Image 1 (spheres, rainbow, N blue to C red):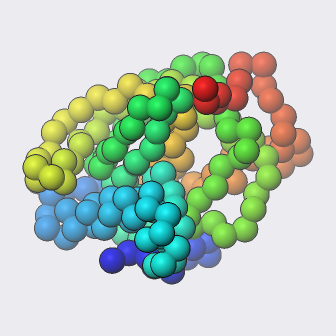
Image 2 (tube, one colour):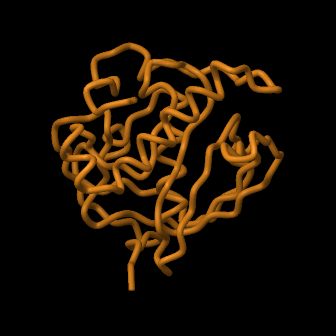
Length: 190
């Protein structure tokens, strides 16, 4: 079982590497890694379990964060409308995005980053990405195009950055960390 202590932290070179494509069909090792990432997110939603086993909850985790430099990550989060999203994503490629930007007013956090970094991270408000989705329950891989907006788009882009060695705080404006461009508005939850 993957615990918070097992998550690779800032300073480990794997977090700054460009990840490799995942071979299709998936190997058992890659399936197991996806299962571990997914299970970590599931466990984080159980408050009692996460306290007992020292699991810092998260809404996404990428393979480099568990020391595997491959293009895959898991997302488990609610969107602004309360809809639940649960994805195991392989070899994603953002194919289009909006000009409009969005950001989280509370800033972003990361399982691999233990210290606070204050400032806004402006991301595309809407994205489209091609990828493979792995269904753990059916042991099935399907080619898909995801159209995401708002919070889910932010989460996707955060995890996607991990595949290219970028951490969220790299996006914070060093001179004016709370600058808001004209074409950016915060994610708002009802």
